[in-house]
Length: 246
Image (cartoon, rainbow, N blue to C red; front, side):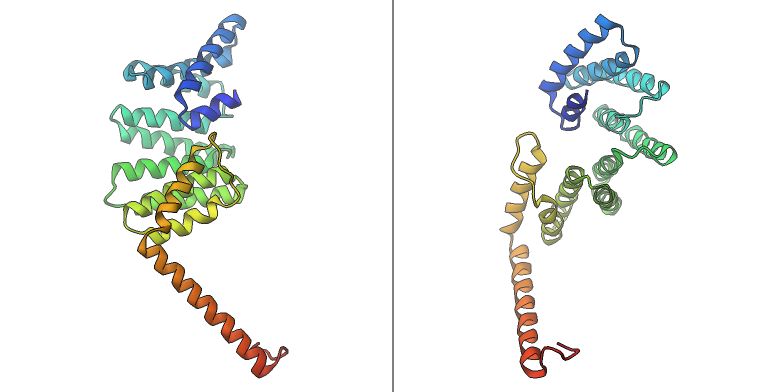
């Protein structure tokens, strides 16, 4: 199930379809009531992404509602994100945003925060998609996601949020801000085909580094560092190592 949800979060349709078929077989063979709800949801997700959006969305809604009634909250955040994305494709971004907001309210009420950062990131994507001319609310949602991921030590979720924020900054002509938020988020992550956000993030960072704005900022930082080193050496030579200003 964890691998299933991992593929869902990254939108890996081929693997979700394969896993959905296997889950259906197991659920029917052993009559697993709880997993029947997961089966209905994931089968609906694969159906919706396969072209039958309306039919698949109904299955996703029924599965999500069944999981709610059973208090199956382990993957609730990711389930609701996938559902909200399907609602957007069906032309109802308002309903999609309401789903995310209701799920975040449940997070605060229940205290189960495993996917809280990812929920805020998804909320930012919804806000930006609905009103790209006014990016401030989406920016705030992405920053909240980054802060929560940092507090929880969830670096992969932090990277996803940082990438969303960097894309927003790039789209609004803020290359320096995009580079500044993405560079530290990528530190320590080796290239991995299992995490496309790493590949996308590195490609974006490379592109940003080639912009005149980012190059100019790097030169300013280097001049400032050189000045600080020069001042430190001057104080050391002129006032001595024990002087307060040194």
